Image (cartoon, one colour):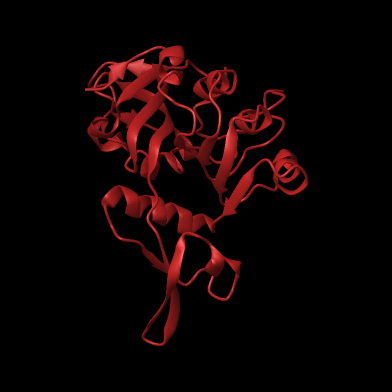
Length: 231
């Protein structure tokens, strides 16, 4: 059973230098209240694994949206993501200031690398990136030829923490995601030593139909209640 804690208590679990996965796709499906609190904390030097670095402006008029707050407040020393073009601060900190290390991995490849990390597999074979700079990535261990086709062998990815967000989470930690907000949350919940889940709504056991549980409570260590983000 997960522990139900306040957002401030959950933020204190993250030490300096931790490797943290954040679910979300351009902010959709991100743990907004937790990320906001983390961005205002004293934590530093995070290695952040996520699909992207979100955007400077959010749909509700936010000045910085989702993980963009962590970049803006300089909590991140190494960003591992699939694209960062929507957040110009990443380019500024990486290419101009040299204060942020950035590793880009193809989107589907990163998802499968995280899935492999969660499943205890030794890596992922993929044709994506053959003949490109992906071959020079520290996460690429070389090539293999299978039935005449070249593949890259990419390492599995795990983290110290995964921060995910669900629309409803029950008292046993089972998570239901609304619409497309499942995105990276599902695989990340399997590939971290400690999983912190932010609920828009905490519900009693049985409210979420078993067939709607996308992340089982067995994967969730801590639950925080963030409340409805929109409306």
